[in-house]
Amino acid sequence: MIKYSFLFIQLFVITIVAKTQVKYFVQANGNLSVLSNKVYKGTYTTQSGQGPISLNIRNDANFEKKAGLGIQAGAVFPINEKISVETYFTGSLVRFRQENNFTLYNDANPSGFFESGPLYAVGIVPKVEEWSILSPYLINLIKEHKEDNGKANIMYASINGKILYRLLRKTIIGGGVGMQTLINAKNYAVKFERRGDDPNYDPGLFGDRDEIVGVTVEKRSANEKFNKFGIQATLSVEQKITDNISLVAEAVQHANKLFKEKEIIINDNEPRMRYLSLGLRYYLK
Figure 1 (cartoon, rainbow, N blue to C red):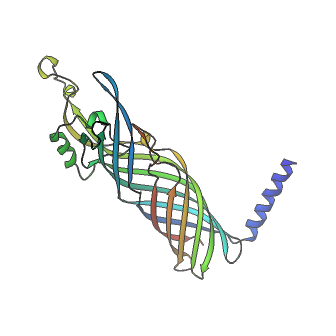
Figure 2 (cartoon, rainbow, N blue to C red):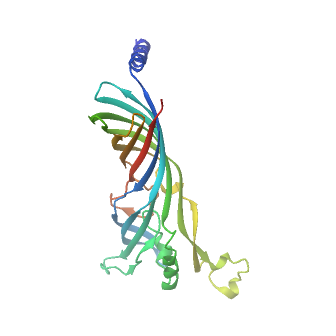
Figure 3 (cartoon, rainbow, N blue to C red):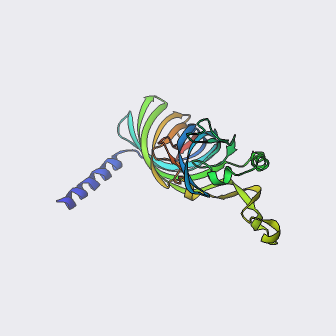
């Protein structure tokens, strides 16, 4: 019975498609990330000479808007004069830059005993045991890398479906959902230079090999920082220019949390990817 039901559904879909004028399209997009700024509060456990201690932490994270790009390919299946179904594949490069202002505090120092000032790094929060021991000189060196540090470039691929409604003769609105996966992620991050990195390091002459003596910023893989799979919602407005060319504006919101790694226990106030896009669509003849 299930087998025959499945065959019936297949024949029904084929019949509907055969009776409709399917339109295939390709599209080139420019996008702009618009992540919401977040305040994280939580606890962090670190090691001291007396053993593990718990600290309270607050991070005021600001996400700067950055431009990216994308491509789409898909098909539109008309149901009637007003309603259509659209299915499509999207590849997107989304970019942002994250600025952190974090404070460590405890019951004895509720106003905070360490404040970082603006520091650029991608993630929930920088590693406290590294940043909190930096001298003002090293922190100033980090802040000098204003062009690159804290930037993230993320490539997503997604499969999507939308319901379209013809609002006016040349204006079509739509909404739908899709499934996205992370393809690749890169970020610019601080690399700490330690005394022991010197091939001529001599513990008898130079002291602690783990002492931080400098910083650089390098571009590195960041796949481990971000969640790999998720669901997204899309709203769109399409404005026809000619029979074959349209402008399409979209707003995309991911449902899953952006970051995977967590170096602290935080409240549930994590960022989710959000971006706007504007594309030029061409319907194949």
